[in-house]
Image 1 (cartoon, rainbow, N blue to C red):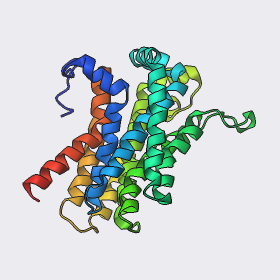
Image 2: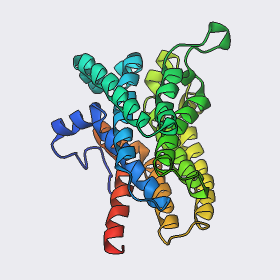
Image 3: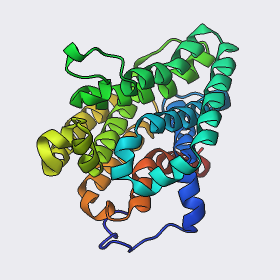
Amino acid sequence: MFASINRAGAIRPFCPAVTRFIVYTSLYLSIAGAAMVYISCFLQGLAFDPVAAALLVLVTFAVYNLNRRTDEDEDAINHTERYAFTKKHGLILFRSAACAYAVALGLSALWGPASLIVTAVPLVAGIVYSVPLFPARFGFKRLKEVPLMKSMVVAFSWAVPPALLPICHAALPAGAATGIVGAFFFLLVFTNTVVFDIRDVEGDAVSGVRTIPTIFGAGGALLLLTGLNAGFGAALLLAGRTLPGPCITPALAAGVVYAQGYILCFRRLVRETLLFELLTDGQFIVLAGTLSLSSLVAP
């Protein structure tokens, strides 16, 4: 998939206007959230949980649109097209995001306090991550200004809900499979976050946001991600072999290989902004689709 992209513009998204709308409104990421729930249920041997999927759709849509209101200075430099879209439709996106999270919290409350707490994790993390809550003596105002902490908070906040919501709703205890699924999501989201930081390094540097790429440079960050993906990925594959089911290890391997693909092809992919976002943010959609097809072929 990635190796075939040899020059900017080699592949262009179908119907760019519609694609931009889906990406810039975070609807695409919301679909990815539902895909994470499907993957989680598949790897944990659970029936697909449509309520958990709906919660992830609502929460993802809400958090990313709310977060963009706090990231306008960086977006004005890093992503001028998305910035213009957000400024034009900012009010309706903000109101829609607030309503979406309110609905998510209300729906999760119907499934018990555990579901409500897990659903609130991205909101709490998003506030701590984006809003200037810390005093000057800390050396930073927002948690996103702490290089490693930023990526870890984002990865944690998006690994927890899809891993835990299905077992909360099934009234089951967290087991080894839950931990492996959570670690798998953490690795892929962490990688995704740092890759986008590499793309956004100019705006982050101007805005004074210290990320891994602003410290180590793009090349250093890519090498760091490759080492992390190889080491952490190998550990996940070994752990996955302890779980029942013939598809667990191949599914984990597919996710790790996909992430490594866009790490290796970053410099070519990043030239096409929209394609770059579709491929990097689409990792869970592709994996969920592959698992769904495999289950139809060999149920």
